[in-house]
Structure formats: C-alpha cells, structure tokens
Length: 441
Image (tube, rainbow, N blue to C red; front, side, top):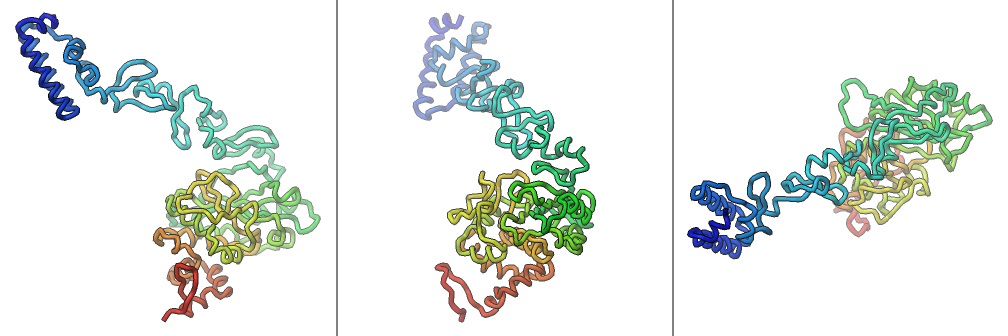
C-alpha cells in the first residue's frame, strides 16, 4: 500500500515532504507542531489518491521520525508528550503519568495500586512496607506519621488512635492517673464570640509534697476542674510519686479566665510541689496551624540565640538541660526538627511545644509563661525576617509599646517591669548590631 505510493509517481512528493521535515528538525530543533501538520497532509494526500488509510507507523519509519513522533490513540504526539506505564505496559500521555516510589504509572494504574497516608497525603505502592493500615484508627499511615497518630498503651499492650484513647484505660475509671500515652478527645475550649486558630495546651509536672496517698491527691486535683478540662498522666521523668496535669486545648483567654480558676484558688499547693523539684517542668503546646514556616523559624532562632540566653533562663526559671536542649547554631530555616527534647519541640504534626519553663503551681508564674508564648507568637508575625530583630530587646520593646498588651499580658508586664527591663528602655538605651550598647542622643 504505502510502500507502493513511496515507490511510484508520488515518490517525488513524499521526498519533498521528508526534505521539509528534515529542514524543520535541523533549523528549529523540534518544530513538532509543524512536522505533525506535514504528516496529516501526507495522510490526506494518500487518502485522496488511493482511498485508503495510511499506516502511520510505517510512515514514521520511512520519514525517520520514530524517535521524534509517537502515535497515541490515533493521534500524533511529540515523543516527549508520551510516557510508558510500568504496570499495564502501555503508552500514555506524559501529563497523565504519576511517579510512585521512583516508578511511573498511568493515572488508571496509579489509582489502582497507590495508597495514601491519611495524615501527610504521601503516596506509596499498595505493597510497600512504608505504609500500614491501622484498624484502631481505620486509616493508613506512613512510617513518618505513625507516631503522631498511633499510640501504644504499655499497661494494656495495645495500639490506639491519637484522636481517641486506649479503651482499656478509659474503662479503668477507678484510676485517676492515666498512662503517659493516653490521649483524650480535644475540646478546643473558647470564650463566647472568640474566633481564632490559636489554641494552647498546658502540661505541669508535679510530685507529692508529703506522704499522702497519690490517688487521693489526684482525685482532689481533678475536682478543681470541670469534667474533661484536664487529665492526669504518669510520667517516667518524675517517677511514681507524682503526675502530670495536662489541660485540654483552649484559647489564651479561656485558660486565663476559666480553666484554672478553681485550681489556683484552692489549697492544692499544700499537697503538690513543682518549682522546687529539679525533674519538674512546664510545657506549653500551641496550634501549629497558626504559624507559617517563617514564624516557626523566627521562634527557633529567638529561643536559641546566645544573646537571649540570660533573658530566657531568667523568665523561664531554669537553665537549659537534657529535656530542653539549646542549640546556638539554629537558623531561620530550621523550622523542622526530629529532636523532641529541644527547647522548641517540632516533632508533632498538630502543635509546636515550648519546653523551656520550670514547673510551677503559682497563678502569676504559669500565666506569665503562657503570656510569653502568646506574645512571642504574635511578635514574630510583625517583625521583619532578620536575626538582629530577634534579640530579646526588640521583643521587650514590642510588649511595652503595644497598646493591646498591658492588660492582656499583665503578669508578663509586671515581671518585665520588676526585673528592670522597662526602666532600661525608658532611659533610651538602644542596641546595635555588634551587641554593644550606647545612649541615644
């Protein structure tokens, strides 16, 4: 058929087309749209002269275009627009090809053989060991997301979803102190008419002040709160003579005006202690959703900047230690970390955790810590992305001069004033890049 056309009276015409195509390839490097137009003209001529459809694959071979043009679904395409599916072993459009663990699949095969992590959304082959289905959560999780979503109860030796809790522990109503891995449902408590993405969870590590029964004091502690506002958990870092008071998620205003009122007004400090126990700390979780990567990077630098060390250890009530590690080499780009015991724990998907504070049971101190975290969270959103702006004096000045902070951060303001930070600002001392100070003119 086509060979006949190629060898007889139309040979000259076809030769002209081949010459034109070679020129297009030579001059433009591709010119695929023009080449495809030529191919369609050849087909049309063949159809008109012999009333037969041309063999497109033979045509491409004769014109030496097999490496440049492909036939797919009865149409011509540049070779770069056609890919190969490693599952069905058929061609497909490159726009439809999907990369899955360094292999390539058409969309149909990809949909059939891929599994996605229900947390981060990453895709894996259905037979991959990197993703597992967890019946307790009715979800697939990759190995990287597993620890944030699947917990293990040491007491009952079972897995459970981090969105719930160990059913065996829940059924153990006689024990007021839950296992360390216990996770209650999050309530996201707010004051009326509040609308915010920023929620906090406070964890206070405590031990018994005397030889009272631990469970009795635990029940007394729980009675200072509304149901589900806090849970008590065991923690190996404080031993068997204490527990951790863990609040549910609540807004800044709810924490200050509602959640802790009865607790701080009670005589619980006669039974528990925290500040004078070396092993006790206080941690504050904040909603990760509120922060951009740049915001987190600024906080990381602020908390690790050597220039800020004295200020931070004074404010937090303790030196850095193995549970809140300080790294002076942190940069703005270090908004990710896999080290849990850093001064800012970034290993959780839902929260960032401030770990610098000494354990404390006093209202003024606990709220000073919370006010610091809240004010720093808003401070980093307003300053420019420069390390020099992250020295603690810029933060102190921001707190002092912001008209909305005097009442909102009353405990923090009182502490800054008492420690003399505001007095220095009033004397117009300014700080320059080399860390020296001079009086302003």
